[in-house]
Amino acid sequence: MNESPNEPTGEGLKQAVSRKASFGATLKAVLSAFIGLRRGADHRSDMGKLNPLHVVIVGVLAAIAFVVTLIVIVKLVVAS
Image (cartoon, rainbow, N blue to C red):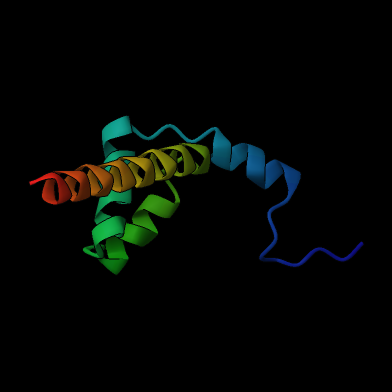
């Protein structure tokens, strides 16, 4: 089969998941991306360091925290 150079292979995916970046670095990357304050150089640097599985997990948790925060704020405003 022809593999596209942009599609991850089994080995490339295993290598990406085995990356060891700190939790703080992953959290910083995801939160700065959430608010749009990400420099291009930082993004390119993180692409080689961050574990994609960790990025997805932190992203989902950050999105849940954001939604819960909005719900709490709305309930407080409506209740008063």
